Length: 119
Image (cartoon, rainbow, N blue to C red):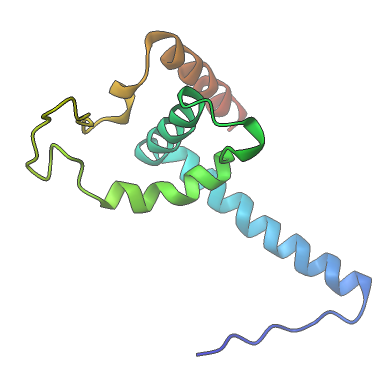
């Protein structure tokens, strides 16, 4: 099924299309940030890239991580799948917050307080 996309003929129509698009994206971002599990998974991904020293220009954005988080939440973790860590393999916990250090958790809690204060 092909989606029909109307091509704007004026700048005003283009602005209206952009406004509608970004309103939907803003609502989606707010819903994802308010979902604690998605937020924790997204922050875990961002923290992981930081620990791996991925150059900043190549890292995911918060929006990108939040977009990918539902797919990761649906996957079973190594522990849930019944695998046991051997030969130095890393087993991931059910809670992404257990992947963070104390300092990172403090930063995340500060961000959450800021986000909740804005709502």
